[in-house]
Image (cartoon, rainbow, N blue to C red; front, side, top):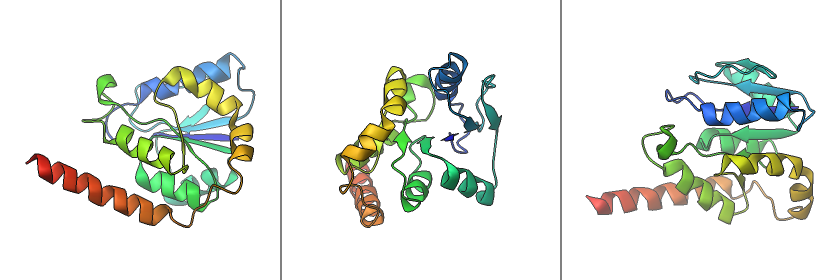
Length: 168
């Protein structure tokens, strides 16, 4: 099962949902998919979905998923990694009015450098990332580790905060 989550941010993330639904509708990905759709306006046709999930249901979906596709929310990413999953991260972007700024893009790039996530900034690359997921995982065997994620995330957060404070 592929689990997709867009989090609880109040701006829609239709760009991701439309592409996931297209991949399912066209049978490009012939695997069951479940979407936590949040405040998105788009209603999937080919995938099961629910706007919001309780914590236990969310963790159950993540634990049972073969692949987790998520926005770049730090808590969701940390939960995926703690479950031993390498998440595919599609950061929300300001240009598409999915967030107020591009902090998710910056955070995703940082985590990609640390080999903690697979990043998709161009939605057209999502298909290849999902189709080649098992190959990516096998190439990263031995390099993917959950042990330093929290320290890495905290270090990035401190650096980002310092950079923002420096602007003022």
